[in-house]
Length: 304
Image (cartoon, rainbow, N blue to C red):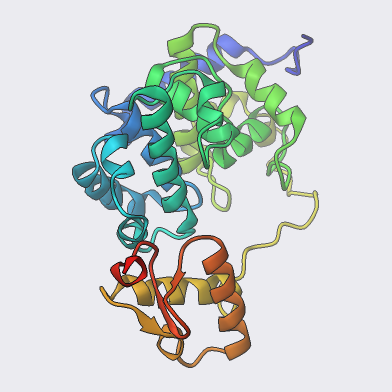
């Protein structure tokens, strides 16, 4: 395979600079502890998708205390899992985690598989999560590409202010070409580049003055040119179906009984509530109980 790296990039020195920085500045997150189980790593990766780590860490501790193994989570009711998800957002992730735990019990004797193909076959596990679990739980050499990795590598190597709006083949190839050859070094490189993007090479206010690779950064060397790619649109929240879905699920989390249709999202547009409620039922996040009562899935009224 032909490398996508410019000849001027000194990969070995780049690795060392990032490794040295990470050894000093890495945050002591519990799922980075060597004693953390592969299940704990998988849980952290799913929870961290589009969710700030400040919200993830307390929830992760609660889940690991309550469901320390896949078998523990698989044995829990889906409604209780959704309730415990709290305000992490995208509650379908909670159901997919339970489904993945069930598959791990049924297919892998309750142990998170190491093979990426087996990981990808689990419900709700995509390319990124499979690669991340292989790297961070097992120390394997895998291509882990998240938003932070894409931005850091676009700046250092490509001289661009931001990565493309969505993941490209070229970005995956670049990330692969930058991986160290040794498995353990590759795993550390993946998490170190993520950490560099989270703490220093941020999207809106990069701290180039303290960056360990500032002398090697093509973007900084070019004078930090502005982003000239397609417009990057932020996600709306207020008034969206996603907000209303969240209101409905939160209302059901806060009670141990069912609620009527009018109690789910008072004050919201009725047509929008009906649309969101239908979507939540289809996604398995809400269960209808008769004509006008609703609950989280697995509610006792539904079973009676």
